[in-house]
Amino acid sequence: MAAVDDLQFEEFGNAATSLAANPDATTINIEDPGETPKHQPGPPRGSGREEDDELLGNDDSDKTELLAGQKKSSPFWTFEYYQTFFDVDTYQVFDRIKGSLLPIPGKNFVRLYIRSNPDLYGPFWICATLVFAIAISGNLSNFLIHLGEKTYHYVPEFRKVSIAATIIYAYAWLVPLALWGFLMWRNGKVMNIVSYSFLEIVCVYGYSLFIYIPTAILWIIPQKAVRWILVMIALGISGSVLAMTFWPAVREDNRRVALATIVTIVLLHMLLSVGCLAYFFDAPEMDHLPTTTATLNQTVAAAKSS
Image 1 (spheres, rainbow, N blue to C red):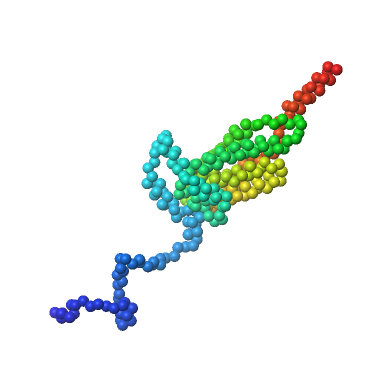
Image 2: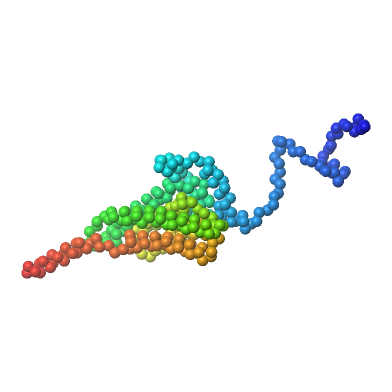
């Protein structure tokens, strides 16, 4: 039977002192609930995989899908369904515009600005503003070029508004639709390819067009060299946003397919910018042709009467 003294509780001092006296002893540390536990180092992550997750946005993908699943979706024929696409504040729109003007190398535009809350508010109004900027600037450019010519009679060309609207909105919707379908098709063949939703792709294309609004206004300057410098700057900024955003989505695919995809995206973007400049600003205007034709007819009539 154990003695009474052996069954009594004893107070131990500092754990370090006890370990110094008996190095083979095993200690258990019970932390105070009020104290904050120290961080225990875990196994290091591979640097390559961490960079891929950061670039592709895989870190937040599970959280985004979970939050999206918690949202109560409305039927597509209701107003509430489309209202969610415009649920964005002014700060978010300005932040995304700033991100499209100042692309950060190695950073994904979708992950940084779009994925948390993709919207159609910014792309819609950016396209609408760009339509009127191109149409109005094209008319003013035509007026300034022919200013001072006696045979020139200025006539506002309202048809440029409808033409610009058709071009801009078709590009901002049809190209993202085709790209989304292509990425979904390639995702079925190569499982490692990251996928973007159609709304995210529309968002990227819409915000990438913002740089063309001040560019179209500066195209009023009647100097072809200045116009081409401006279009190259705008193309470089907006094209880099598209290339850096969609390269992570295709780089795991076949090398030729990935490069062909990025080249096609940039070429279509170049075709839009160069086409708008050539048609709305550099095209030869024939507004003074009716006046010249009328003068010529009067001369011919006078010669016949004599």
